[in-house]
Image 1 (tube, rainbow, N blue to C red):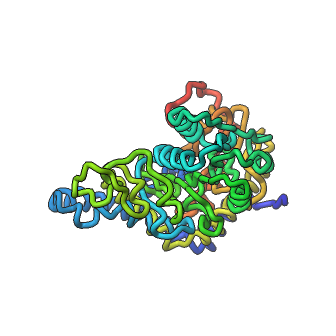
Image 2: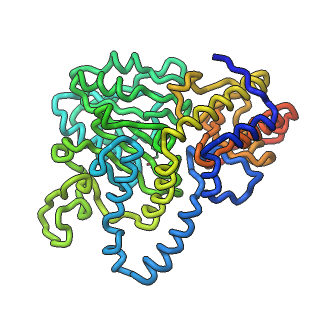
Image 3: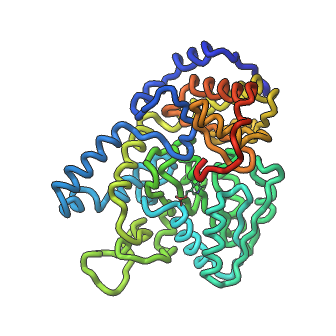
Length: 424
Ligand SMILES: *Cc1c(COP(=O)(O)O)cnc(C)c1O
């Protein structure tokens, strides 16, 4: 599968000239054209439309409409935006709602799932899952105090998900199988339909964390028969720092599974202020308290752009860009000691390419400080190049790789110390 790519900048310019999605870049705020931003998988760039909306939200909707804003669309915003996200993940409009953070949504759905599976004490995941997900699962198990055990199946190489091990482990004592659909470190993407079917055959429920997939690759929860899902909106959805997350709960489970954090926003007829809790219909029952409306509303412009561009088109571009990045790694960076810490197989890879190097952290610090490249770093040695096909250009990838090459060949990293910055 080795495919030699030309390493000159002119070739990147040609690829950009042929890119039918290139015009979408102009819809995003690009404050410094010389800064190469490859961290859209951790915090997407702001859509220009989000800036205009933030102004309208604060000056007109909040400033002028005041409490009337709730009747002008705030109240329905979690469902309205959830219905749009549903189109990105192959769900029905009434199966997705925006609320809380990804971690909190995992807690709510995991507790609900474990309660619905009495007599099944095993919870299954693997060691490529996001650490917060593991913490939340342990917290849910502790709180329930019903003797559940979390089993974390190990990956053989830290890059590929242990799919065979997971299939072998799921059994009639398994309550829930939960995984990140695309692993945050290596970018490995799981066979969602296959693993979901294997879990269902054993009677287990399945919950997918879509944080590193949504907006970057096509997902079809309905076709795969997925029970539950959660995901983040500030990565490829460009929702803004700390924007609330979403949760998906299949229609036929909505009446069966109960929200363990019951609150007035999930109550039927909440303005009756009845002291008896009666869950609302549909996914609203998984709400708890008042949504952070400003932050919530700012998710919508990014989702609208993604729907306009089309996830299949974005996936095609992302695959071409990842293959290009891997080709450049092979030609220019592998000889300098960089390893490829992502799967080679495009089908099994999300939209970021991870490169390992023994001096990874100091190289990352030099890149950010001296070279105006913003990738991100994951301990102990991995530099992630996040490709956000809505606005990442082939030229960005070429620049990032050649600047990386300079950092190493000119040994610019040597003057940086190993003190870890808080956010990398
Ligand atoms: C980013 C991310 C999250 C984010 O969790 P928050 O609770 O919203 O901070 C969760 N899971 C995965 C897999 C992620 O990549």
